[in-house]
Each structure stands twice: as structure tokens, then as C-alpha cells.
Image (cartoon, rainbow, N blue to C red; front, side, top):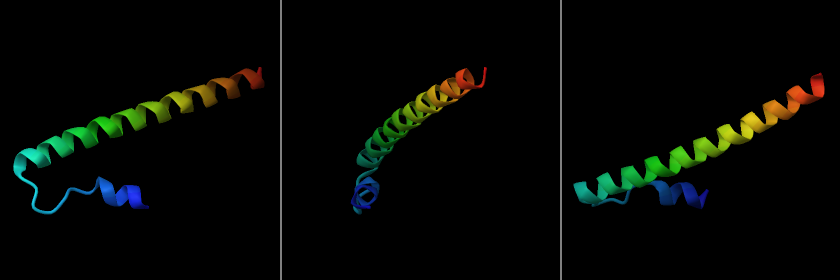
Length: 52
């Protein structure tokens, strides 16, 4: 749960810091989502092979 705390913007951030933080966070989320989708496709594909 500590990781989630670290993801929150710090209090007293400047707008620029906040923008940078949002951009970083967005990149991170994209990476995570991309990885999850890849794994999901792999699982789906391997599942299909067993059916035939």
C-alpha cells in the first residue's frame, strides 16, 4: 500500500511539478496497461489452442 501513497502528488507542488508528475504517472499507467493487455492476449491465445 505504500506504493499507492507515493503515487499521490505532494502538497505544495508547483504547477510545473504537477504537470511533470501527471505526465510521469500517465507513462507509468500506459506501461502497466500495455503489459496487462499483452499478458491477457497470451492467456487468451494459449486458452484457444487447448480448445481445438
